[in-house]
Image 1 (cartoon, one colour):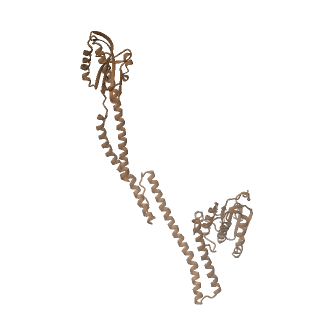
Image 2: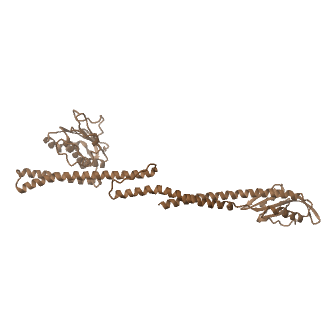
Image 3: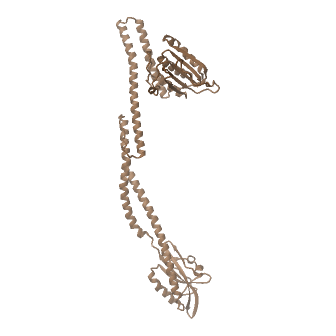
Length: 476
């Protein structure tokens, strides 16, 4: 990459220099043609004045005189012509003989009628510059004396400009190429070195070294800083994910080990005949087995939800019926644990949801609330929104941001808290049904927690409750 960058910079520099040189040569050539044309026009006019003073001489002598006077001018060609009143060009030495113009010029290029009017004509054809100047003269042609308008035509090759410019251009090209190589190598090193360091750090991260970071020297370019920051952020995210994964594995291991230890202990007691109450031992084993089954089921469920490997069958669901059904399922458990479970469905609406998944969300929320409540749990709804309140100790503000992550549990009241996956499953299911879930805590000076779920309302169903925000449990 360094070589490509260096060669690209050198090529761009030399290309720019060549273009500049070509433009310079073209401008110099144009300037040389203009200067040559003006010089020829002055010389032609001066020769015309000099020849006009030679009236009365034979035509051939005037032609020889032109050759003598024009010799020091370094001309490409010269001619002495006559212009008739109609603009026809003749040879001055031989009137009525066709004129032969130097340099392959055509009669129209020297503009005969402008010459008849006494104007000096000049121009160029490529590198060939020409000028024609008129003069009046009386000549002796044979035995006759003729008064006519003569024309001096001069041609000269203008300098191309390349001869003077090319050596300097070549020398400048060599010098600039050398500078471009040095500068290009420095620039390529400045660009490539951080990229190689970033590549090396990325490879280390891919190999498992999640502590590897790209150093960002002071004064680094913005794009390189952004790249290094992105790689460092990726490493931090992966390290955080690995730490969470380890914590999850530890949590799963703990939750698996506890019931397995209990099952093994009671099973060995039954095997040795040392169990004082076989019925109670069997009940403990069955209970712990159900706990294991619930944990494994929650893990599998969360995995399917995170990978979106499940099916939703949304349809209109009345929240009043869903809340009442779940409350009825937990009424006995609440009574046995000394808790009061209340349901308020007067303002409940109709939502677009999967009935089974909605029941799963409500079940997890009620289980979570019963595990942390001190005396009361309340289910309530207004429109397409429902919430579950408990009067437990509440959730610290710093823990609320992670409450919907797997294996994050709240401090309970001595009752079994669960697998730590219930709220994570709730968050995934609510998001899948295009809803929102949030937590508020504390609800008052005594604590308390509210988990609120907002789902999509069904058009034509019950309208959202027009009153204020839902009230917390009494006494908070």
